[in-house]
Length: 431
Image (tube, rainbow, N blue to C red; front, side, top):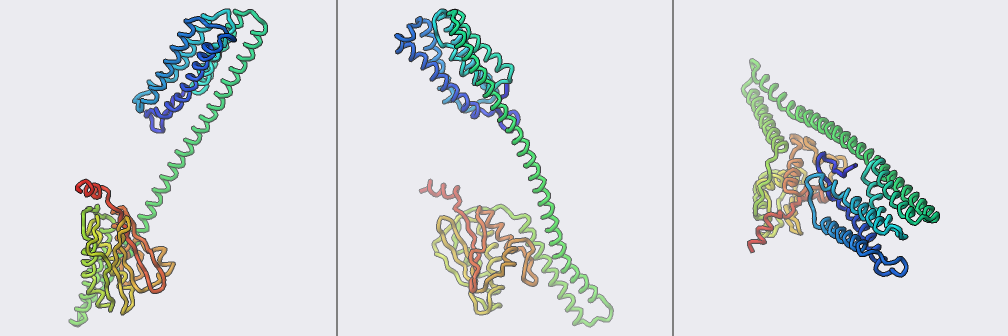
């Protein structure tokens, strides 16, 4: 017997089995019901069977209804015992009914061997060839059993033709089912091989990404370290003037500061902390970012504007969002020409949408293709991690960051943060 199992070893797939047996049980119910209907409404043509035959058919009909009810109400099975029971139950029921009715009505022209249709189909679906052949043999025996009692050549010919149909139908279904099983096994093997290839490819991509990241880190660290080393070496040379020595120390301090900033940014990118979602005022968050960026904006002759409803609230980690927005605003200030404006805008249209736009642009296509890649930057002294960190923050909230507008005179980055369902449900319950 070939049981139905899921892809996970030892896990019983009762749903597949239940659907198959539901169809077979319904077919069997219709078959027994048809025999009952014929015996009770067409007695003038087929004769009146014995009360015991009617009782057996009624009993089989009720048992089949009970099986359908059980299949309809049972949802979970923890072992293959149900597989064994549901596979053999209709075979045993119909074999007993067909045999008993053939014996009870021996000598009369009857068609009770038709009850073996469902066992033959079930055997073709679930068993090996020898077991199926044995069940077909029982059906053929019951078929010829009726012809034997009637002792008619026509009955033998009819029984032979019916047996041939049984045999051909059973073998054909068995061949089709096993062909499908072989194809399914082949497909399963192909899928497993595909999954293994995908896992290998993913591992290789991760290693390649780690290699690129390591190379970028080494490149970014090497420059300030080299500057620090050469500045200190120059300052330590005998005969250096004090002014030159101070200049070398200032260069070393500036490069050390740059190295510290790079390290901090990399840690923020590589090990982002989980978002601590809480209710916060959106306008206050944007205002705080604007205050932090005002000094940098003034140095570049750029204005920072706010466009947010003072009463707008959202569910987010205000510290992380401030960090992400500050990176976006500083980038916009650096890109914006003197006299331009950087605008922080907040909107709520199902999800919270935070936008940072400036009056520069457009960003070249060759740059937009790499905007969110770590360590990619077009700014002198930039770490290339600001946009990558900002996108990580957006995704930590279940949203995303994208370049929504890129046209002459306007560039806009949009951070979308979805409504947090847990907090929304809590507020609804509180109301």
